[in-house]
Amino acid sequence: MKWLLLSIIVFATVFGDLLQSYEMKRSGEQAVDVRGLARLLKMIASRRYLLLSIVCMTFSFFAFMALVQIAPLSFAVPASAATFVLETVLAKFLLRESVGRRRAAGTLLVLGGVLLLAR
Amino acid sequence: MESFSSSAIHAVPCGSERAAPRLRIFALVFGVICLNALGNLSLAWGMKHVGESVSLNPLSFLRVMLDPAVATGILLLILWLLSRMTLLSWADLSFVLPMTSLGYVLAAVFGKVFLNETVTGAHWVGTGLIFLGTTIVGTTDSRTSDRANPEQQ
Image (cartoon, rainbow over all chains, first blue to last red; front, side, top):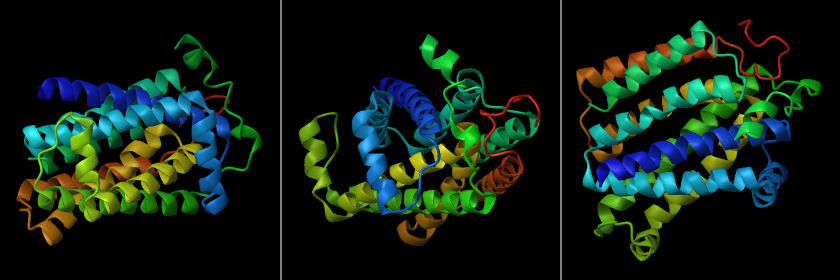
């Protein structure tokens, strides 16, 4: 069961984040105020990729809640944190982001830190 | 997915807009991190005191959500989601992910202070690595996917 939940978390997180980043790049820069928040809610309701990303994140959230009840946090956190290496690679190829040496090195250091924090 | 991949760079309209100032990006990163850490803390505190095991059954989830601490946590996490969406409209996903991972450090600190969890030497080394990693990522361009030559950084 824990591997099934972990698979749901990884797939849903990666797919959801990629879709959300793609849609938010398309939308242009959003404001941080009440109007901005209202506009975001409207966008979620009207853009199918954004809506799908929220569905993915919801699945990921509930799967994580279920996972931490049947597996130790020292398994759940590093296993699910590994998603951001996968996401960084996919962001480079699917979202055409520039992941240079510095950004890749920084991301790997952060991953190492998260793995140590979860011990 | 093919159209998703092939149209990504062309669909970005921000090249014609003013880029978000760096300080504003870091301020929003800070806000996203705080909302996530506070939301998770409230959720964890509520889950520890709710006394009900959560399964994949939706009714079980709904009962747990009625707990005030769990409900507050979920509300804060909704605000976190919206502020993170705004951040993703300002910066790359590959920039946002490591920067916001500072939240793991804050979660560890909150866990020690409020939930009496143990912080070991390995945790401090992990904290150091996360700080170093985010500092390095913080020196890169926050938004690159609308550049004419994205390989230069």
